[in-house]
Amino acid sequence: MTTKQFVEEALTKPFGTVYADKMAVAHYRDGSWTPFEIQETKPFSMHPAAHVLHYGSTCFEGLKCHRWEDGSVHVFRLDRHIQRFQGSAERLCLPIPDAELVDSMVCELVTACKDWAPAFPGSLYVRPTLIGTLPSIGAAAGPSTEAMLFVILSPVGDYFSGGLRPLKLLVSEQLRTAPTLGMVKTGGNYAAALYATRQARAKYQTDQVLFAPDGFIQETGAANFLMISSEKIVTKSLDPSFLHGVTRDSLLQLGGKMGYEVEEREIAVSELLEWAKTGEAALSGTAAVLGGVGQLVYQEENYRVGTGEYGAETAKLRAALVDIHRGASEDTFGWLKKIV
Image 1 (cartoon, rainbow, N blue to C red):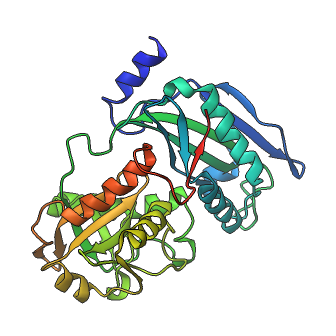
Image 2 (image 1 turned 90 degrees about the vertical axis):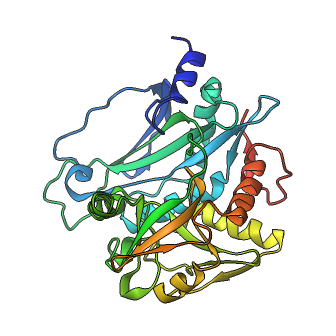
């Protein structure tokens, strides 16, 4: 198959299941990073005692490149993603990669794989990943002093391939993950939320669980949460207990410029249920951008959010950000970087 055929096929398959034929790889040994290499995307081997396999020393990022109508490819907020990536590495006591190294790995890999970037509404999903590779099962209380950094690419279609639809959430007062690691983009946080999410789907046919420990809204297992009206955007204020989403931050900045009043503060479940009578709610993240919420389940009761459909204000806000992604609106924030 040609690259074009692979990309066309990728857009018909589940999000993130087809990969470009090249990846970038660097190693950390003896206190420094090796020069990275662009190589064939293929399985790699590691020692069965590798730190990551036993003690979860791994973090990653998820960001996108967008092909414009003129054929150029632009990456969205690479600098902010690298900053968060470095913060995750620090919290997990992994070797922190230099920003220049990660930037170069992403940009050179995307340049080498430029034909894998589909046209709008598709995009090229970028996944930088850092893992601890020290072969020591005795290092449960110590960091991995060896690591591997790699970047893989996946051509993806619109996350909502069947069209925008309202989501159904279970509001749960249990913890999503360890509060001190909530802001770290590590696999363990997603695994910690998986069981609760699967239980909720089986019992209530929900799409996600909205975690609200102690009765205050936090986030779902894979996305930040926003309340939206024609006048306001309200979301939880930043703290270490949940992921500091780049899409969340982008929507808040963009919303402020569009005339919305932006509030970052604590949100009680009781306030959310009252808000749901007339307002909108949404989940933000790189993959979906902004997914509208149409229904909540809380303490065995069902609550409609707004009209129960994908909200008009949510759609407007999402469209404004997507237009920046694809070059249909001017990027006045300086978020996009042209790669090729």
